Length: 187
Length: 183
Image (tube, rainbow over all chains, first blue to last red; front, side, top):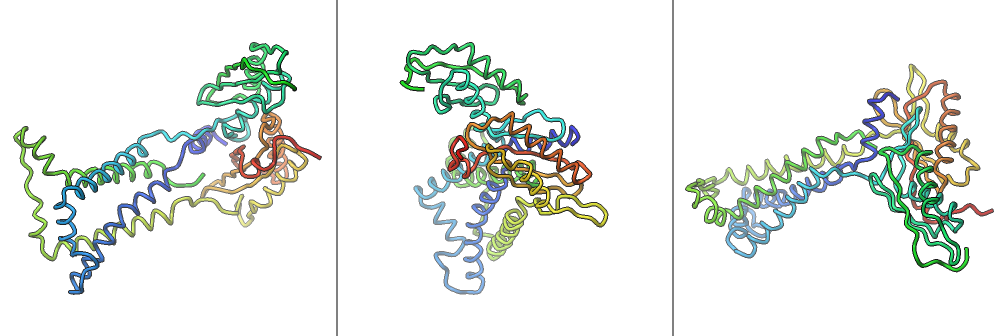
C-alpha cells in the first residue's frame, strides 16, 4: 500500500461519511415539493385539491403569522444543522497503528481497553477497576486501587506510555493517569 | 468504507443548507425588508407568484420530479463499493470469502479475536477491508501482531500482497462475550 493510498484510506476510516445525512436532507427537501406537485397536477386536470391549490398553500403559509414564523424557524434550524454537517470535521473515535504492510485502524474503545489493561496489570488490580477515556491526542486513565495497597502513579503512567509506544498510535496520544482516593476491598 | 465522494456529500449539504436558509429568508421577507433593507435604502422587487398563472404548477411539477430523481439517485448509489471479489487478475478472480477463511483459520485459537469479516473495495487494484472484532480489554499489541501474521500467511498463499485495511473494533459480540476467555 503506497503512502497516498494509506493517507486517503486512513482519512476515510477516521472520518464520518455524510451519505446518510445527504440522503435524508434530499428527501426532506423533496417531500414538500412532491406534495405541491400533486396539488399542481390536480389543479391542471381540474380535479378537487387534496388540501388547497399550490398558490393557495403558499398564501396560507405566508398569510398566517404563527404558521409563517413556525415554518421559517424550522427552515432555519434545518439550514443550520446542514451547515454544521457540511463544515464540521466529523471525526470518528479511531486511531491508526503503525504497520508497514497494511493500514491498521483501531476504535478508541479498543485502545482504551488496552490502556486500562496495562494500568490495571501494573497496579495489580482487576481490569474493571481501571477505566480510560480517549481523546484525539490524550488518554485519561483512572484507577481504583485496593484499600491498603499504595499504587504509584508514576508506575501507571510509565506502563500506559510504554503501551502507547509499543502500539505506535497515530495521531500520537499522551496518557495521564489518576489514582482515585477511595480504594476497594479485595483485589 | 465506501467509494462515495465525501467532498460531493459536503457540497450537497451546503447547497441544501443555503436553500433552506433562503426559504426561511423568503418567509421572513416582511421583517427583513422592515428592519434590514428599508433602513439601508434597499428595495427588493415582489416575486409576483400570482402573475405566473399556469407556469407555477408546471414549474413545481418539474422541480419535484428533479428533486425526486436526485434524491433517488443519491440514496441508491451511496454506500456502494464493497463486493465479494478480492483479487482480479487476467482470467483468475479470488473470492473475498477465501481470504476471510485464511484469516479466520490463522486467528482461530486467538481468544481475544471474536470475529473476522473481509470485504473488497475499489474498481482498480482491489483493497481489502478486514474487520476484526475483539474482546473488551484485549491485548491490542498481541491482536495486531496476530493479524499481521495472518495477513502475511494470506499473502504467501495468494502469491501477492493486495492493499489491506484492518479495522480493529468492537460490536455486539464484544458486548456479550465478556472481557476474558473462559474454558
